[in-house]
Amino acid sequence: MSFFSGLLLALLWSWFAYEHLHNFIETTSWSSLFVAIIETMVVCFYLCRSTPSSVSVNPFDWLVAFIGTFTPLSLRPEPYGILPYGEYLVFFGVLLQALSILSLNRSFALVPAKRVIKTTYMYGIVRHPLYASYFFGLTGYVLRHTSEINITIYIITLLSIAIRIFREERHLANDCAYLEYMQRVRYRLIPFIF
Image (cartoon, rainbow, N blue to C red; front, side):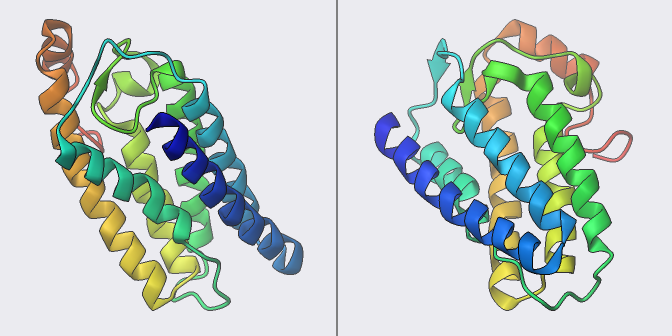
């Protein structure tokens, strides 16, 4: 299963990166370049992730992870945007995503899995900074590259993120260290809000 998911991820990522790099060359849209770079970073960390001590075997968790991971790779640059300055929100999301990935390091997972529980750096601020980065980055992306398909992908991805947050916390809450972490870091995505 891991081989096939890795192969699918590599194929979708290649298509995604090509489209965004091509868009950058044609339009000099820096958000396209940064999105291609950060998704390359995600793929690298996915391939180098550590072995978990436990992984959810719930088929629903796997389905949601599959949808949430692979659906955003279908986003495509569009010439029209309802708010072209959404590109700045993409930059913020990419920066947050890079910091979150570096904080997470080899504990990267797609489905709920217990690796080393990260509680420092970005994970000392909110419990799911990587998902927060997706929220900001994808919102900016859809504002900058507006189309019906991108909006649909955006909605599906945000729904999967919401489900993944609760499913991951449910899986990790079996560990006393994670329960303590949840008490210490109260907010899931945005400090003092949620």
